[in-house]
Amino acid sequence: MALIAPSRRRLLQFAAAATVAPGLAGLKARPVIGRVLAVSDLHSAYERTPYLLAAFEHEIRSHPVPHVIAINGDIFEQGNVVAQRSDGAVDWAFLAALPALAPTVVNLGNHDNDLTPDLADVVARMKGLGLHVVSTISDTRTGAGYASPTATLPFGDHRLRVVGMATNSMNTYPKASRDQLSIPAAVDWARANLSDRLSGADKVMVMSHAGVVADRDILPLLPEGALMVGGHDHLLFQHRQGASAYVHTGSFTSAYTVAAFAADGSVTAASHPVLTNGPASPALAALTTKTLADQLTPDERTVLWTGRRAMSLGDTGRVIAAGMARAAGAHAGFIGHTTLGNAARPVRSAATCSIPSSVSTAR
Image (tube, rainbow, N blue to C red; front, side, top):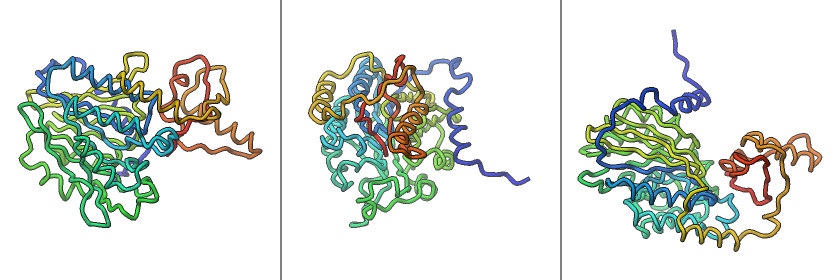
């Protein structure tokens, strides 16, 4: 009987179902030789950025083992008016703080030149901050890659080989830059290059910003004991495959993932929420407050509507779209699928829901 390839929707459902692998809680603790703190798809989510930095600081202080910080693409968001007007001041300050905490690697996503159209300028600035950058994106003007697909980072007594791959969904990149970008399909690139790029590696981390469908075909190419960090689909899960771990880390800075490399060669991973009722990094919190105050107009701070009950993200979007239709005298309203980000805090936890007119993180 012929097998039918699962649809993208079904694959995403499978991935979400893998969020908690049965039996992991009962495993014995193994000595940890190093940890990776991973995030993806931040999209200028300024409500949580200072709290994420504080969480990283706490993780590294409270666990005296080598660390690497992994940022798996889409740091910036053109649809955030504050990010746009401030040239990403908060995002760049966040990035600048990371190398002082631990070696930090960035795998380029499809939004990382949202605010600075020339990706070469973005990469140069990142490297100037002491960040390692990896990517499979090439510059059509020169034929060279914007960054090497591979980096090797210090990891205590070990070395962490990192390989980064981008999505080749060209229509998800800023339109003005598309003719400057040449991007192979991640699966094709991995089949042709991954073995050589990982040859002789000590510890391995593969970063893919190509989505879970592509990742499915890359996973079998990984050596045992590897960490694979996925992104682009805004998923949150951890999946164990033998001694290896495959994770997606969420989106809009709502969570981060800690991956622990053990002395026995295995990797385990767990996700942690970025809580906004705890400590924030003081300097970044002050900058964020000032940037919001400087860049948002009174009209953009206006609350347009207050609901009587807490709603899910999907219900919130549907209410807003219906309200737009009524206001325009139209049959239907349309709102971009990431316009509300990962939902503002009141949408998730308060008894009422207020939507400010400045809500905008649409892709």
